[in-house]
Image (tube, rainbow, N blue to C red; front, side, top):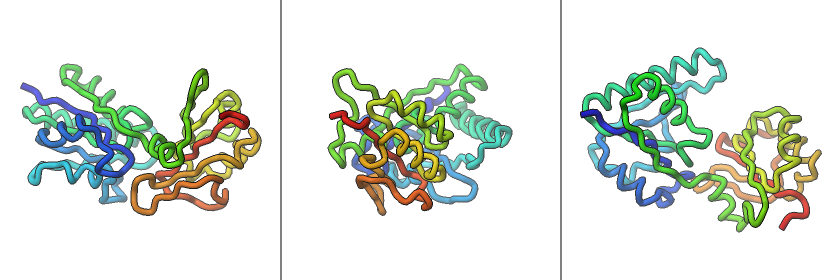
Length: 236
């Protein structure tokens, strides 16, 4: 009998923000799959989950290069899927760990889709997780949406014009990956009259956390795990 693959969201980085369902899965699976960059030996998701693992739980590292080169990404997903399939077909259950939620800008989505094409007979279950933007909103008591308001998730890697076009219609916007493209993000928010009241958050629920009103200097490079919460001017 094949094992089950669980995509487990471990929250923004604090071990006590995992759901009970996530903890129960982590305590019973045979193998933990941890995504990592070839240039980085660490795994934030693994560090977050570690207090909930059995002492001798096997950990397998899956390398995903930080690149936009499509061929390299496809090869990495395929190799990760093959490694995962080998584990599952041996009868072991495995949990792939993701910071935040497994289906929001997560490597797990690519792995799940690749595995589905490679081995559609494999059972996959997804355990949702608390996101960093939810944690940042809780820190600042920011209402993300109410009544008829909209909530929009945006990748900060988008072009300035694309960001402006999207921001025009969103009551609340969450800009994720707000680090390398900060000058364009800053200009887009200024153009829409949102720069002054924006909330900047980085490393939420982790050592070195920053959560504050106002954007950082656009010429700086904040940590990779950075985001911006932006409410439309005049909204509640």
